Length: 633
Ligand code: ZN
Ligand code: ZN
Image (cartoon, rainbow, N blue to C red; front, top):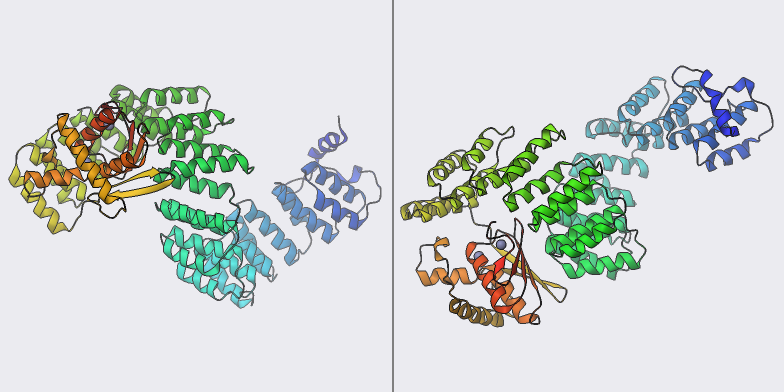
């Protein structure tokens, strides 16, 4: 038995009022230990055993009441995770000074015990001990906004509000609590802006959706620290503004600021949103060449980026390299396969994950249920949906219901889908109703479709998509009066269809196209290519599906509108700017319409190119005239 182990076994007999220190003072042999040496040793202690041995030696040498040593011990016990020993020391201290109170308060906030920290603070005031700036900056870390405001008044009373640490801590309380005005007032009156205050201020803006406000502040201060750049870059990524996120990343690189893991994670996510595979690959090499550790988070972010950019093979290669895969890594790969319609592989991966005793999360089930939906696997989908709650104790969220309605509706189980929506434990939203309406259109169930639409309109749940779906249902039934009525209603409601937008990356640059767009510098060539393509398609038996255009215009006008859908422009651009045989990858913000789907299949056959389209819902891989979705999307 080692001396330390022996030392610990003697501890259990000593008791104090809330925790015992693990040694018996009276039995310890005596030898000298100087105070200065003890301070250094305490500060250097890396393990609890080292600290206990020093503490025992202090007791043996009659130094157990030395205030500085006790203060040092109290802090070190807490930072090594033994708040119970800190508490014992604190309670044994006679008439503790403000330093002791602050240290024990800090220990509690450090361990997330915020209520107890606040309680200790009020006990300190009751004992007539006046707080100092460190007490305030410690206790403020435990505060939500209301106690924070009260402490702000106390800081003013004790004349501590101008202290930079107190001010920064107060700013963080306001920023976290969403009081942008108070946070900004403090920030503006700070003679010296600390990095923490600046980061808190920028975070405060981007959390509350004011990314532009954050950017103004960021640009005005010209910061060199990567932490601030990260907050700003991530703000753009989280708010669906990947172009700006990537732009700012390029500025960071030219400003010679070294990106860290956090930067890389944000930019990889932006690349995934945008489908910017070129930059994504560059980041992958950067990670390899610049000593950024291949952590499970970095690995998962790469898997996500590659699968969202359409390169599932690369995603799998990275996934296989992650050594200790956590549930996030598994989820990312499962969702990736599901997005690409490889339902069986997604389900196999789920089984492997469960066999390794990794507990699935709600995200796992979104991946699994979508995989079932894309693969038309109704029996499996139902079973997974039930097992979620029964076997894994995960309460379905609105997204899970959405997946189930989609799965049942698309497979033609309209009544079951409708029943599920009516009996949902959460209030169904416009997306759920839209999904159901889409299923009614797909299966030509106009009666149910009209009933649902009526309910949706009456309850103010309609969006532009609902109007369009109902117009689709009427048009399919030849009810042109109905179509005209919907068009009027849509006009009166002021709702506008979200404009279709497709992007394509060529030579590491992402090009964006809106429907009918003429802004691209190569527009002339693009439209010439479209014209040539159209002739070719017609020669292969293509007839434009003008019935999906609801404007009150002639057939040829409808054909023109269909012919310039954004994905067609992006494909034409891909055809003129890349070498024959190069695969074309398109990212589309909405679902692909049936006409574009037909056209893309034919183009893949005529040109011999692989065309990969990511729409709002999933990936379509078009090869030699057919699509991986099996025309089921
Ligand atoms: Zn289209
Ligand atoms: Zn498809």
